[in-house]
Amino acid sequence: MRKRNNKGRILSRPKNQRKALLKSLATSLFLHSKIKTTEAKAKELRSVADKFITRAKDAKMSDKRILSQTLSPVVLKKLIEEIAPEYKSRNGGYTRIIRLGQRKSDGANMAIVELVK
View 1 (cartoon, one colour):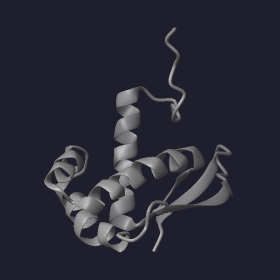
View 2 (view 1 turned 90 degrees about the vertical axis):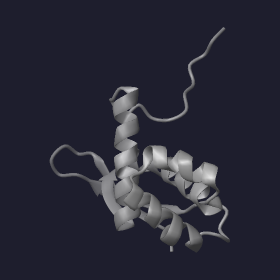
View 3 (view 1 turned 60 degrees about the vertical axis):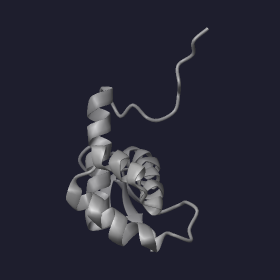
């Protein structure tokens, strides 16, 4: 019997929109090194960003091609040349989530996602 894969959050979006959202959040994170978003999006972003950084650490041609499918050339260059070398000796946990409390308008739990230095 086929069972549904329960990995990941749906974020009230279809798959293509969810993928685009996480891509844009990762792009903003790599450009600014710190972003403010909801806690659920932050937790999903953590796994996506960590996978991107892990691929960028090797910087083989195949890894660059895979990353270039999702990231823009400006972000890709920054990720490979500036961000990834900082984490050469680190085996994971490249991002940190800091909880901020609830947003005033709708009560959503907010968080800051930042790259660990």
